[in-house]
Image (cartoon, rainbow, N blue to C red):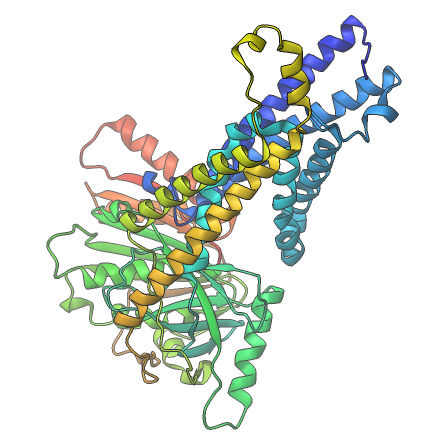
Length: 575
């Protein structure tokens, strides 16, 4: 049906089309920041949790442009009295308007449920509605057509392969070896890992517990060091949400049971994902600022620094100061894994100082040693295991590159084959070629445009499925050859402290004064290059960042080599 528009309406439609192209450009980049196994950002030194913000910005921009694109088109249809005719049309050729409307509504639902006010309070609701991206992409394909879909296909193709790699890596499932329950609803889980698996400090894993949810994955910082623990890895979970509270109740149920052998708790693991290098630790001195459960990445950093003192290959800080801000003094128990590092400082080549700030308790005579040695605050449980598999980590870069190449070849082969089968090209005699332009148009219109879209979708699904089956077979054969049985005796005991230096201190009833802390550190480390790492609430990150920037700018203005320079890093992890 031919539509008639005024000049201003046509110009407005052209502007709306430009906004649609801007939304398409955002979509082309939207999925790249959330790749894990094929992460491009990690090669640039950007962690997954930090790169997610780019995904949020691109998603917001895409929805903004798409809303203007769709709203403007509907507005022009309305003022020209064509909205009833065009809004519900599923055209045989060209852009399918109804598919675009469904994609826009789906995108708006995903964006609204991802707002911080909803995501933090109703994470499960956000998590499940975000899987509507499948519907969004399919209807975007029908709306934009195959030519425009190829503009965004690169990111979608890599995202699909990344999902494939994560699925393969999380199989087969392993079991929790042991757990320790700390005060303030925190749990430390001990997992088996392959002896050859190495990871850098601040690495994270994604964990799924099928007995709690068969679909939900949650990320946690690894608190152990692969240089210290060859057979196990540990993580600490703060049990505040619905999923983590279910885990807390499950562990407590095992603690309260009278069974001689605790039942196995199967878990699926993705990762570890971490920085490619440890350049962020190459400083003369290091200031670590943690708030609450934000202590977890620093536990792995401190253990890595301690284990690397005998290795001259790497340069690590000789002086480390840890500022730990907590609500209750019982949360000091989370430092149990580094308790040996807090004692016998004279025998070390590096120096660790701890300052604890308890914000919601009055003055007390309790000491760091007393809290860490109070074994009644920590309850431990060992689990039975029915799995002979440990966490193996990511596949090699060559393996992943080969999989990308094979999947790409399969996609192209099936795309050409299906096009040849379902979109036949009519052969014409040489004498008919000059006189048959109208016939070409007619024959082209016989094949609906959505057929080409379905061919792209089918080729992609077939290629991914074929690659998945091949990759599962290869991984299964490799695991059978190299996976040792998991020992039930592998687990961590509660550390008991020896003498502790008097310089470790606990301050009650107040928050740290970062101006004073930075000034004292300046005096103690004159001429040093100081790295500042912070992990915790956003307000604390901002306070430390502002103080660090003021100090650094002041030292740069003085241009004095004897003055230290503060290098600020913010760790963005979920726990």
